[in-house]
Image (cartoon, rainbow, N blue to C red; front, side, top):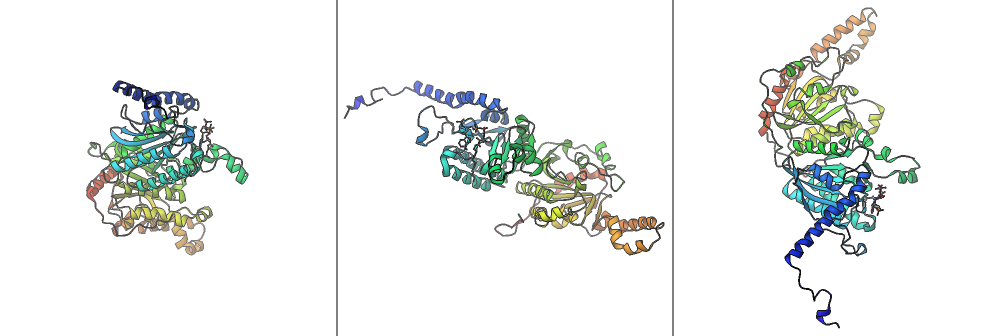
Length: 534
Ligand code: HXC
């Protein structure tokens, strides 16, 4: 047995405070500067920013407070020496975006491929718990090889825990995922559970199984991009809500998005001082001539929307997906609204499966975070066809009805042209609980369009009429149908439309309606939860 004074370290005097401070500096330097130096070359070579650069660009300068900088891998196989990387492949903390607090985690791909193990997972859960406790949005910056292979089931457990946190946080705090590199395997499901997913062009991909596994299992030859590139995810599958041309653009989108959102479901969204122009402006008057006189001529719904919302500014959500319906955040007299509008330029604005699901999720997001909904209807109905029926338009088209009916936030709807059949009912009709329903004189609220209706109702008479006289009779019957059914006054007669307004009045009328509805309260029914057709 060696004498006590011979045991290592015991003969040394205890470190002074100066030594301890120097040690802290050394450790911080190791965690931040040296890690960053290692990361820089690798990430920049791939056209990507490092985790810290991403956080720095997202947050207001100097506002980042890092948490768990010194967390390290605890598995003995990885050693306990000082060279083992601090942080364990993820950087977590909080800071400010435009002066408002957000929590953030950013995967560091240069440490074990940004893969999630126990220490990593613990850090991510901890920052999510903090975001939930203090009620602020969480932004997750993904760039990772997924579950850390060496940590087996423990890693899987953390993914499942993360999914549970995402669900707990859903509807309580806004959750935003940024995909800045790989996001593969089961790790795609955490972003899918969040409210918004933003991908960066060229450097990101997101799929459940990569090209090698697909080739082995199905024999299909494909690529990262075909399976999960930004175009596939934003235009075809709809998983991504926005694709930034580069990382800076993705970050700018997230900053703009946060500017519209409340910190949580109990706080109001930020409101800005806005002095509306009094009287009718040139933009207001231009609305009077937006709708073309020719029935089959289309116009761009954005020509309407930009003239109604503050400064003509809209932040589109899922702008590349289901372009037949527009979902966007905007402001009316300084306050956030969610805009849902049919887009006549695409598929005549008919609602298909994708449009129903896109708008339903957006309406539910707005409702959860107390964001009023402004709907513009110009819709010929649900899209007919074999593909749609086979794809489940009944079950999936029902989602939009469910979402509108369930939403208790202030709902204002303007019917501007067609509102036929199921399209009328679903696009924020009075019957689904809209508070204020306005219509332009050009609104055609009816079971179906005039020409189609005349051919159903008067087929026999038309067939029996001499060919030369048929066009005149048809014109007469169409005019009669329009007078009797296809106009806004029948709906107004029943009180389904509160007011028929001149288009130029829309901006003022919409603002007035939301001002009146600001204190709207709705008592919910007692139930555990509904059963939306998923
Ligand atoms: C441990 C990993 C890793 C992982 C990458 N690395 N993924 N380490 N676990 N999952 C390491 C690599 O060994 C390498 O280490 C470094 O990270 C960089 O990886 P590269 O392969 O060189 O990078 P790249 O060529 O860009 O390829 C990226 C990649 C590939 C496509 C992501 O690394 C890959 O296929 N990784 C495995 C993906 C995977 O199967 N993940 C599990 C998914 S299942 P060195 O030391 O060489 O630098 C899942 C379950 C979730 O996530 C469960 C949810 C319920």
